[in-house]
Image (cartoon, rainbow, N blue to C red):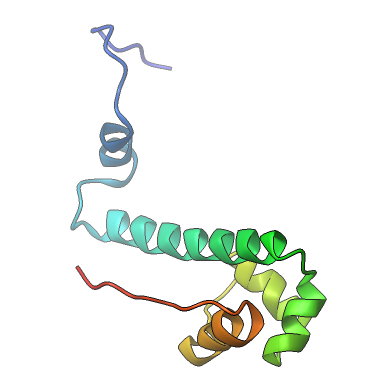
Length: 101
């Protein structure tokens, strides 16, 4: 491992720039997109657990399968917006607000 000459620790943003390139590059945008999907899965899992629900209970409430809920929570594959809305609204009793930047 190459040592840095200065003693200042690298920021997370600097780490991302080095590992994935600057924002706007193809590799970095792919990373950012995957990270957003990961965060969504974590939010759904945390909300489900906060409501003391199993994956099966959530699946039953929103009309999908336990394996689909697991895939969403573990960021395995794409999720349809209509299904995401059902999981959040029907299954978790919450609202989804999106922001475009």
